[in-house]
Image (cartoon, rainbow, N blue to C red; front, side):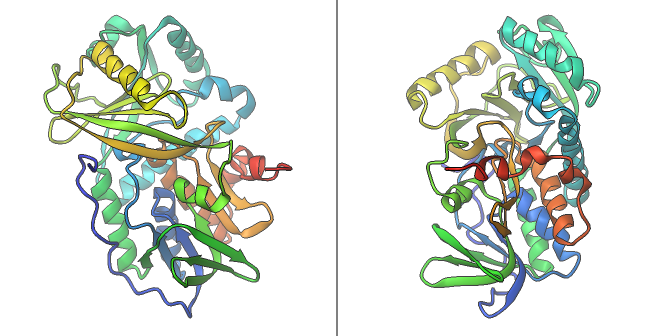
Length: 386
């Protein structure tokens, strides 16, 4: 089944039809949040744009519709290597929140980040020792944490303020309608697709369908796998299951918009209808799906008092092995840009990344992206044999 946010629309909104004879300024492949905000900014400057999107995108972990400072399960590992770039990652989050609030309806709240054992609590405390200088959080033991959520199996938690929640399907449809009204051409494309780069870039898909463009931005992780070829050991397909609990045992504290475990495998959020959503995520090709799902359901039962879900649905998305997205031109193909591997942080980073990419393409430059060389695709794609 589809996610409890409702079935997606049968088609993209009706903007100007794509014109195979037209030379576009930018063609975006994939209706990701990054691409939608990229096109929003370009449309403000009168650029000729087109959006190519598969007709039925897979359900993704970003369907939770919650933002919080990303990489929470990796900060302690990445900080020694990222250094000041970690500050730029937090600024990406802050810019995304500002953009989301300016373009649609959102609700403010906090995320409770839980540690389920002493090792995780130690990692959480070490993380907060430096992250609090950049983003305010409050560390608390298990007893104070129960003021926010019934934690039957927890060593403690961090309270993360100034996060957002939204209705992901309605918000995305609002962005698509806005782009159509601004003259962005849209067409449903079928996979696989290919790119040919010379003086411009030609996108080809289906039976003889093609568009020419000055530049192409591919910003959909699963489509990126198709573009880059498989296997790519550093771009990891992720799978999981979403659950809906219509009869929770305890009320959801209204100051919260989500709860996550320290390692990011479980994320929970309230649905506007009063039910709870739980997303259980894991790398594809690891343990058997049955083994993972059994562990997730036990954690939901023992840790959060949630049992007997009313329904479930499959999830798919991609992440990178270092936890950082791929953003920028492909090495050797400067007219082809990539924005992929955002993992479960599409709402937290996607709007800002799309807007900052647009700044670069418009010749304005992006101070933020220039401070984040760790995101450049060349860190993987530029390596011999890759």
